Amino acid sequence: MPKYVIEREIPGAGNLSPEELKAISQKSCGVINQMGPQIQWVQSYVTNDKVYCIYNAPNEDTIREHAAQGGFPANSVSKITSIIDPVTAE
Picture 1 (cartoon, rainbow, N blue to C red):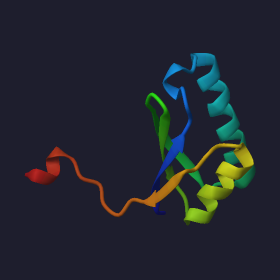
Picture 2: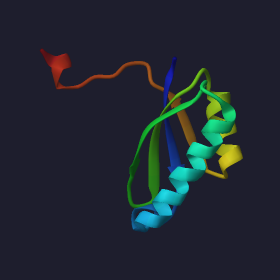
Picture 3: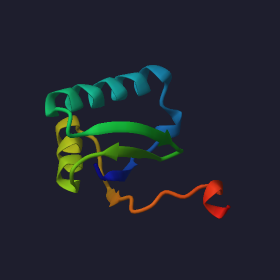
Picture 4: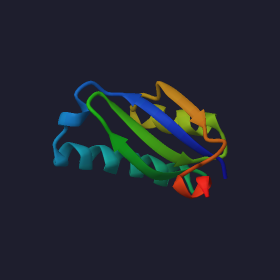
């Protein structure tokens, strides 16, 4: 299944409390459960004003539908074409 990185512009994201992050996570998981197994949340990275999420999904439309149903921004959705790390250099 294709993997995507989603950039979500959320002012003050880095200042969200653990309880607020938990609520956002629960909302996302609830939408995923309703949509079915064709979309999977891998993990997210929270920065000062953005959240970068990694998802597995059949297409960009599925990612955008998840965002719409959850009320989350999806300012940029990019299909990951390759993954590299230090091992790639060997």
